Amino acid sequence: MWIAEGLHRTASGHVVPAGAVVPGLRSADPDATLAIGHGATVQGGIDHAGAVVLAPRASAWHDVRGGHEVVLGPGATVRGRVTALGRIVVQAGASAGDLDAGGDVLLLGDCRVGAVRAAGDIIIVGAPTTGLLQPGGRISTRPW
Image (cartoon, rainbow, N blue to C red; front, side, top):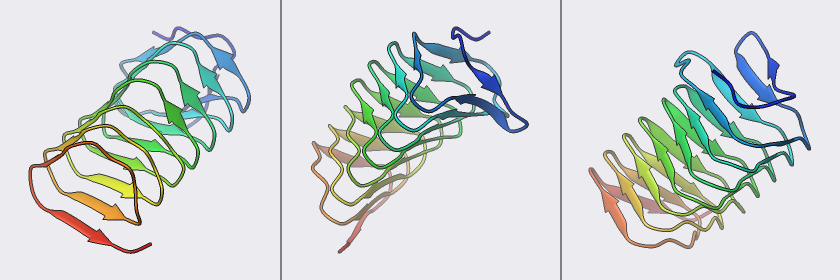
């Protein structure tokens, strides 16, 4: 069940159009990808059983929960916690609260996040701003 107006269904999942404002999203479809368009705003949280992708400058005002993976594009903002059963990717310029991944976490560029907990590795490329790092595996770094 979806809680949103203006949501478009595609062959690979669901898309919130660029610049749209929606109240919140919830879905139990693990095979679908939820794409939040460029500059779109989700005023509530996102709870999706599949992959979640926030395009550049998209924002969510509350927690984001994804199944396979969560990807925060450049400049994307999540005001709450980001949780995924798989990996989490945070690209340059993006910001979020605490991260909790069932797989690896990739922090790319000058992103800003809170504490990071990963069941797998934490891979840092560049110089992100983070809180406490708690890997299940290794922490690896390299310059941008």
